[in-house]
Length: 136
Image (cartoon, rainbow, N blue to C red):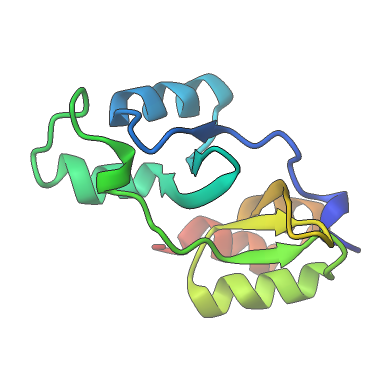
């Protein structure tokens, strides 16, 4: 099975100068744990709900003034839409991440796949347990 079959093509994106509150509102509206950060056509990073908690709330930062640029992870790990699911799972385990950007053959962002989505689509109980327990 290829990633294009399980990825979410509807990617939520915010500007780097968006506040954490704006990003959190987008996450809540979509029932998602992440947003990608872009400036024009350039992807700059990703912010997860965990980033917000560990990097901002724990440090006492104000979510109405702190920007996503201040807490984002600036390295976006990617796979291609025609990659096999097993390759994506290996990549996620090696990098200890839960979300993977998905690119087309022209290196354009076409979606995101989560560890949870991979576990649910493969019905792999071990992978599902990993998705629930993983501290990343």
